[in-house]
Image (cartoon, rainbow over all chains, first blue to last red; front, top):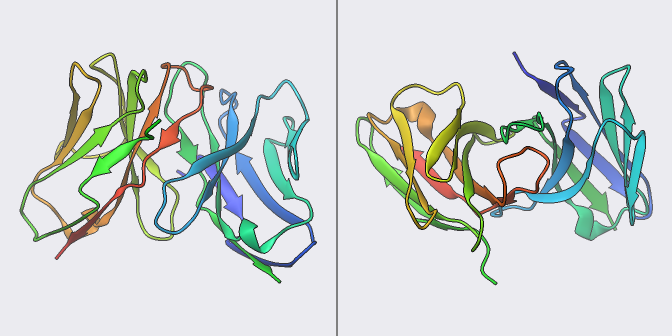
Length: 112
Length: 114
């Protein structure tokens, strides 16, 4: 059973546009939701993370929106740039455990 | 300051063989986790070690084992390799055990089983 479901599988956005990636989870015990960015040949790197006590967190061009009742969270990339082209993974974990459940990934391609 | 390092970078093995992958965490990090990332999928949790003790195990067969050394480096061992074990194996280190502290991933070891 997949604990975290991610969509879309791939995304093409024009430079300057908004990229939106969605994730849904089942386990209500999850209380930490990070997003990772992965470039080819590299390991994932933490982009931004949120706890369920807030509905939104913004860091620069990246925003996480969190809907606890719907058990959904999303990543918004504003003013998308070609350098943002990468694979993005959402993840979830319980605070007492360092076991992360990852989504299946979204390959973002930002066209110049 | 060096990040998480993993060796080797690439590895080719045949079915039935055994493999050992190595990870050096960021200096000062006491937690090391291992993940398997099959092409086109997200990483899947294999093990977590903290202060040299196993603290978590994912849904992987007993062919997979790991250990952490006094210097906090870690090894992942896979016995009796299967074709399906072909994947990128990622090591991640973090300061603490808890889930809300940042995990830093290494570049991974690409294992190909023929």
